Amino acid sequence: MVKKHHLTSKNKYLLSVVVFFSCNDDNNIEATIEKDIFGCTDYGAINFSPIANKSDGSCEFFGCMNPESINFDSLATIDDGNCLDQSEITEGYSYFWNDEFNGDTLDNRFWNIDVWWPGYVNNESQSYTDKEENLSVQNGKLYIMALKENPFDPNNPAYTSGRINTKDKVELQYGRWEVRAKLPHGVGTWPAIWMLNSNIDSIGWPDCGEIDIMEHVGYDPNNIFFSVHNRNNSGNLYGTEQQGIFTMDGIENDFHIYSVEWDSTYIRGYVDGTLYFDLNKATNSSYDQWPFNNSFFLIINLAIGGDWGGVEGIDNAIFPASFIIDYARIFKKEN
Image 1 (cartoon, rainbow, N blue to C red):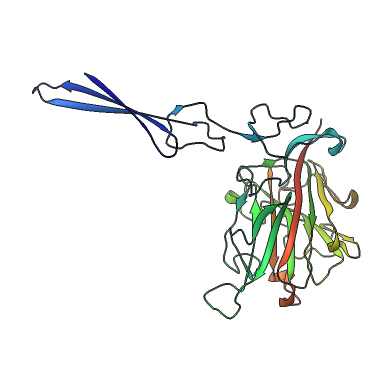
Image 2 (cartoon, helix red, strand yellow):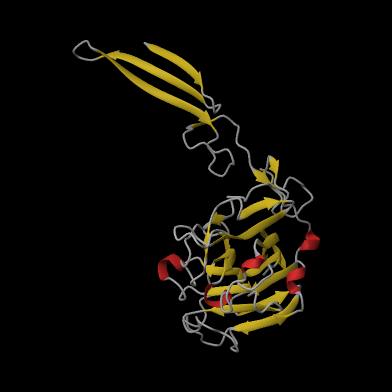
C-alpha cells in the first residue's frame, strides 16, 4: 500500500513524502519513507538549496543580460550591472571577469572576507571584520572603511577595517588586472591592491610569490609602490629592480586606475596607463626568482599601522578613513 503526503514549507520548498507499507516474515507491518524535496539544485545559483534533491526550475543567476555586451551571460536571470563593452578592454586582451560593485552587498560568488585579529599579519593595528560598517557596497562603489574604536579597552581592537580576496573563486594565470580606486588620506593608512599565488596554502609565503599592484602609505602621500616578492626578495625592496615608484601630487584626491600586465616573461605596473614598473624574467631563472607562472588571486585591503604603514605612527584625527573601489577587472591575454 502506498500513501502520499505533500507539504509546503515556509521557505517554499515542496516536500513530497512517499510511505511504503509492507509485511515482513513475522506479519509485522514495516514502513519505508522516501522524501522528495523540491527547490533549486544548481550550486551556482543564488537561491541554491542544499536540502533540495529535485529541481523545481526556480534557479536564479546573476549576470550581464545585455546581449550586446562582451560578457553577456545567456544563463543570467537577474542583471548584476557588470556589463562591459569592447571599448573598455585594452587591445590584445579579452574579457575574463569583472565586478563593478553595482549591487547592494559584496558578491560572495567572487569575494571572500577575511576576519582577523590585530597583529595577525605585518603587525597591523586593526582587526579585519565582516561588518557592514567596514565593508559596504553602495552607489556603484565598494567602501572599505577603517574606523577608530575604543583604544582604551584591552578586550577590543582600537581599529577595525576590511580585507577581501578572490581565492578559489576568481583566479587566473597571466593577463591584465586593473582596479579603479580612490585612496584614503592620513598618516597610519596602508591601502593595498595585490595578488598571491593560488598555491600559497601548500608552499607558504614568500615561496608562493606576490605581486603588489598598488601600495600606498599615508605618511608618504604622493608615492605609489608596485612590488614583486619571491623567496630571494621578500623584505624591503626599496631601491631594487623588484619595486617601482610612481609619484603624483595629491594622488589620494581622485580615482585612478592601478593595473598590472603579466605573462610568462614580464610583469609591468601602470597608473592610469602610464608604465612605471617593468621587470623581465632573467634567462634560466629558478622558481625562487620567478614563482609567477601559476594562477594568482586578487586581494584588496586597508591596513592601519603595521610594519610599513605605522612607521610614523597613526593619526587618530583621520578616522573614518575610506578606501573606495569603483571596479575590479581581469582580462586574458590573446594569443
